[in-house]
Image 1 (tube, rainbow, N blue to C red):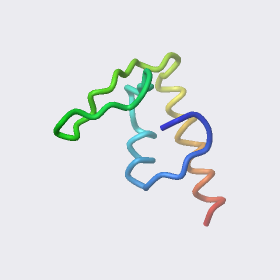
Image 2 (cartoon, rainbow, N blue to C red):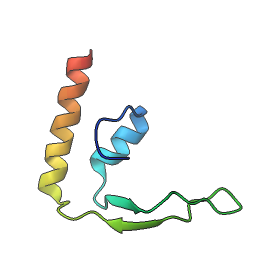
Image 3 (tube, rainbow, N blue to C red):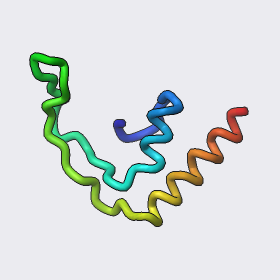
Image 4 (cartoon, helix red, strand yellow):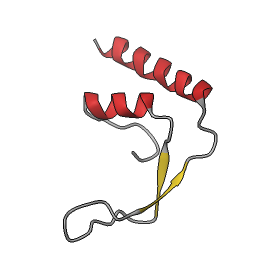
Length: 67
C-alpha cells in the first residue's frame, strides 16, 4: 500500500490491520519470471502493537462511517 488514502479489498484491509511486520517497498515493484514479487522491502519504523491498535480503530471508524 502506498502513502495516503487507498481503496482495498476486505482481505487486504484485514491483513494490514492485523500485521505485526508492516513493510514498505524500496524502489519499484519487481516481478520475477513466475510473477512472484522480487522487490526489495524493508520493515517500517515505528510499527508496534500500539500503532496496530490505532490502525485498527481508524479502519473500524472508516467502515462504520461508510455504512
